[in-house]
Amino acid sequence: MKTLKLKPWYLLLCFTMLICSVACSKSDDSNSDESAYINTQIFNEINAHRKSLDKKAFASSTLANTMADEHSAYMAAQGKLSYDDSIKRAGELIAQENAKSMTESVANKYSSAETLIEALLNDAAHRKNIEDDFTHIGIGVNKDANGVAYYSLIFFKK
Image 1 (cartoon, rainbow, N blue to C red):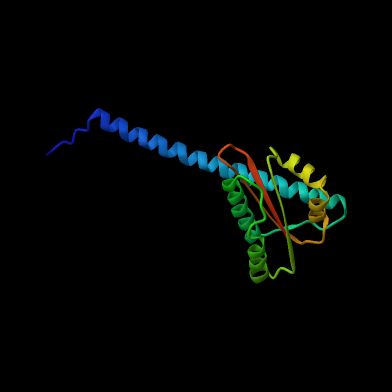
Image 2 (image 1 turned 135 degrees about the horizontal axis):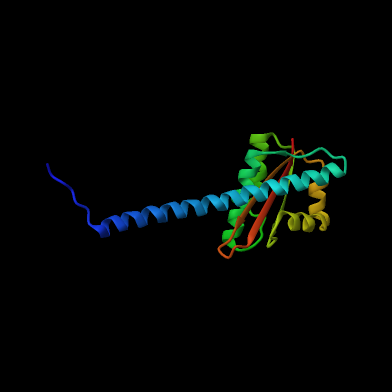
């Protein structure tokens, strides 16, 4: 019978690679968890505001959430706010969700859901988006390489 003897340096290398891969995957998960948490906070804060005005709460849209997340990632990569491809997103919502109308709000540099919502409500155009008769919302948040958060909110009416 042949015995395989592993060198100590080989075991150390394998152990190091295993630790690095676990650490990297946990970091990605924590970023996803943080984004999901912030998205939920934004959703809840906006609906609480609408409730205070006796307006119906927004329903969450999986498609609009995906589109908002992709657009936030795009803005973070570009390092600037934009409404690029909003016509394309509107077309997808019309085709796939039977949307009748759609608008967007974008923002960056806010460190929490609370500060974001406060700023949106202090801006007439963004406040109108939140308080208008839209029925659904999609929310996305992504950070750039420097940790600056970019937010995209997509509102639409069915």
